[in-house]
Length: 340
Ligand SMILES: [Zn+2]
Image 1 (tube, helix red, strand yellow):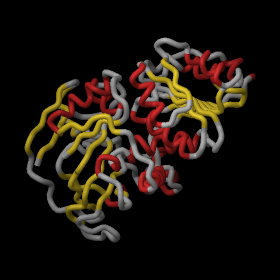
Image 2 (cartoon, rainbow, N blue to C red):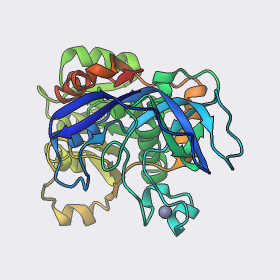
Image 3 (cartoon, rainbow, N blue to C red):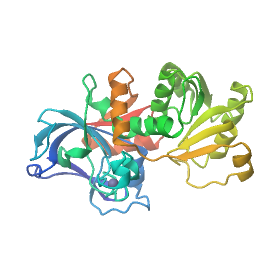
Image 4 (tube, rainbow, N blue to C red):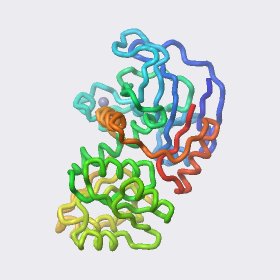
């Protein structure tokens, strides 16, 4: 079978290996059908310092596949079942895991494709408790966007920021994988969506996706534009993941008592904030990372109900690096998919 490994920073290698042995007790064997790319893959590819990992490492953090074999003591799965995989090796027994807050597991063994071997291989064995069935009517590439892109946004908007119908939200980088997901999820509950993009072609695409107001952040200061659009009030929620370049402007774009939720810092991880502004304006700031298994199920249910991820490009496994380059270039509108 084919395996794509990171052998050094910025160096991927596609090799042939023997398929895994029969799945052990409690495990299933999965034939991977699609992997979706995320900024997490880029961080790993560049050798981001915080990754406690050993190379070579099988890449791929978000995927969908088909059950190929079932080990002993695995009720509920059979060969041919279509599934997505939870991408972190949680313990399943700590308090956070027992309460369904999987992304706060106290003994997490690593993020797959980042710290430990991931999904960019034809087959793998995985604990069945980390496998989530796909409802009917979803194709592989869409399903592959459920575990991280859709579920992360679901967790940010609804568990953390508690976005309500009728509220106004600013979605940064509306052309990104999670930005496009945030636009469609917020529109689906009747929010007013303001989004930022970096060029005019993306403005038209964001409009077509349902965004109500689109700001080209290269030609317009987004915080000023947001205050104008909202009649100087500001938005209820800001969906942040850009980081240093936008964070202070994002706070300025919030109304009093507004909520900012962030899951990334693509443009840089440090900034200073005005604490007087923070407490006087009664802002609430949520750090959000990953999602729970429940969020993945909720995401798949939304997809089955017709809410589709935006797919920018599909590449073959051997062209994984081209997919990463496309992400890195910031030219994407939606998700990059690696098809098997
Ligand atoms: Zn745990």
